[in-house]
Image (cartoon, rainbow, N blue to C red; front, side):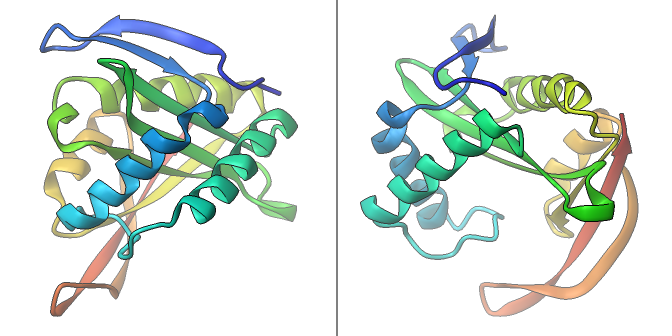
Length: 182
């Protein structure tokens, strides 16, 4: 339902940098590969724990562009300083869960806590409503209180947990489930 490389909104982040929120296209391949691999190297609190190859990232990017066009998911990138610095998505549930979607988000280290995450989530909410999605859920590491605070600010409520779901470093960490009705 959304074509590639469509600008959805622009704004100035808290640090003054101009940010463009738009749908991804194949020209974003190098930036998206750099972003995911930087998050893996940083050991950010995301589920990915191995670096991606150019081929794997190209397959992922082609799939998300197709999903955007078909309306199965909504994927948005945040561009700042001429590069993709963030990526967010909601993916529709299947069958009798088709009114729900799961949210995922990742931001480069130097672009956190300046309003980009909030803007990405708000933009996703707008498009989720247009697709008839009614409930958004996510999972977040129990130890990632910074992200949990952002999600609470965006209206999410803790609705459950999955004990020791995530193997992070040398230990197991609980996954917190948060939901929001649109």
